[in-house]
Length: 343
Image 1 (cartoon, rainbow, N blue to C red):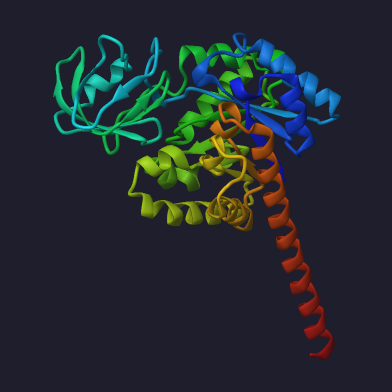
Image 2: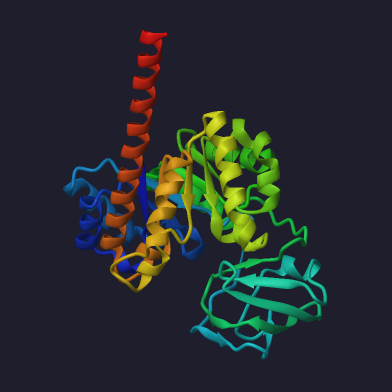
């Protein structure tokens, strides 16, 4: 099993990172929607120092911007109150221009992995006037999803290409591509890695919407590993459908012999609590039983209050699940031998 945390302000110090490695972390994710490799060089240096001190052969995954849409940088968080109107695209809250070509009156905008929901009242061409249906605090660079809009941003941003060129220099072992829509996305990423003399870097295809789920059989030969990314995947369907889609996606990958990881809100309560919920540890356990060979924490380690403790619960639960899998396999083999002997 592989166990990943996400590098962020809460775990940027070598001391904290050493504790995370001591608790069983095997790799780190760097979310490049919040900055470049060069901009986070100090954090990465601390990570490698900690890994060296704890004798861990750390894997470094970078999560590209890809075709994911995001809010621009805000001078400070903005409180969006239910029932109020808000302007997107001018003033404080900047959005990608491609959205204007697809947004229409009544369109839904899901922000920050669906925590906030807006409805478009007017598309003025240079801005959107929206009403807040589900409110909360909006922060910089949070995701924007437009379910069923058919929006088609480019596979790689200019910033993605700059980070790919720097990948080898910073010891990157894997690249995660969000919102994979078809094999063309993966072929474009593979080509960019080759041009950057980084062909040895593995490609992780993130399955984040229904389009990716439907395309999955055709993606299998083009990625080294897959990521069942439940944040935006849960935005693209009623939440009660998500567990079935996760199970079915895992089954396809397991039967194809493709390694995969499960991510998003695995220990979400540990943003602010030192102990997870019972439901969260059951979720991790079941992900391993479904065949996941890696599990990852995101905000829990990047901005949570208890990054080292969160890793400990992730690892201990994952190892317990893996031991259970092996135990069940041994029992099957013993039963098979017993039947064969008496048969």
